[in-house]
Image (cartoon, rainbow, N blue to C red):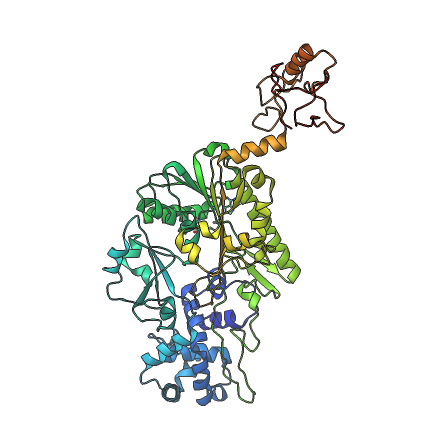
Length: 596
Ligand SMILES: C[S@@+](CC[C@H](N)C(=O)[O-])C[C@H]1O[C@@H](n2cnc3c(N)ncnc32)[C@H](O)[C@@H]1O
């Protein structure tokens, strides 16, 4: 099959592969043509389809070439008029000849369309098309402070750029304008127009001095604010490909801290990418990659000294920009047909959202999570079940992190817009036994590092069940809201009194006896438990009491108690002695009384 038939099948055929156009092309093992070529042709043809439709219809191409389908006419005309190398078929090929026969007419119709759109040159028309189809999303670039500085990059990679004061100016600029904005929330972060240059080809990128990372994806590392020193080591529980790991390393490098980041990645293939990214970024000095290791199987007791954990587990990925971002496809009308304007890329029918993996609006189709895993979502119930399964896994990750003995800070983030994966998981984590036992709570907005405190998009109050402190502590980001980020969620949990809160809860909830590591009461050979308060066996105290107060003692001390076990006191508040009368000052028998 030719490149053109393959691209046509992708744009118009039934979706058997789900996901964005990119993932459908690159995961399609049956393609004969190079995937990159098929992808570029399909994408560019979609972008230009409104102009090309007009050109093809005015040139009456389909009337004269009855064997050409509307989609093939678009793909071939695109390459004939706009690709540098023209149609990728030999001159004798029937498809190519069907276009070549109309060369002059097609070219003059393109000129007419261009002039109608007031574009003096083809380059102007290209810019116009790009601006129509551009996603309103800037390119975010994080300066890797392990290898470079903001100043060094401003005077090298970005030396020809003009600094503008706000993100709205970046969004309003043309895709190729050399303007940049220094982010006001996250340090060492820059926004530029999306088409200004291919940064992956720049020297700074190849040397690991700059990292392409969405602003919202920088929130967890920045909010966690690892300080090293007394705070200790850091765990990145779900680390590949390593954007947040290298961000953490960059923050520590800037502070001159040499603590360890334990980066867990369960998937061996993804762990290879993680190692590569850490290497290019120069983060090896800070990072131990636990390749192929499941964070849930890591024994917290072996990570004494870990004070902070960053949790960025797999999620539905519903906030990711670039999912299903295929521009609308306009097909030319075959002779005799009425209007043939169609929704994006499905030859006559509106292309279904879910084919592109969007999970916010469930229609029959495929959902793709942020690890690229696909599953069929054919109803609202399917979607809810998927979200619930993800939320259960995400909660497990948090509860496991809460058990790390020296942990005091834990960030939890997703690139999901679903409350079930965000505020819902946060509430469940806060209500868990381990959170109560160890004193975990939400890090309040007013306590957060400046940039995060000042970010004004917060958690959903309703999803936080009306708890304002939780909602305000949660940080959200939405795509297409003018702030230029992807959809995102992050919250930080903290423990205040280190182990104090923990001890208090243990005493309250676990009773007065000494317990071992597994929470079992420590007993002697006769099964007698040991009291925490005295370190002595409970039975010894009973015996002492008997000796002191006679065998009639009920083991509850010398004071009279009421039916509910409370010490009975005289009018002055002093306890009544079992032997009769009121203990004057509680001192004459050496007993200092119970605290009831
Ligand atoms: C959302 S991605 C992480 C993105 C990463 N934090 C970044 O900023 O580049 C989630 C990753 O967690 C990994 N993962 C999922 N469950 C895990 C587990 N139990 N232990 C370790 N890694 C896990 C997945 O394989 C995936 O690579």
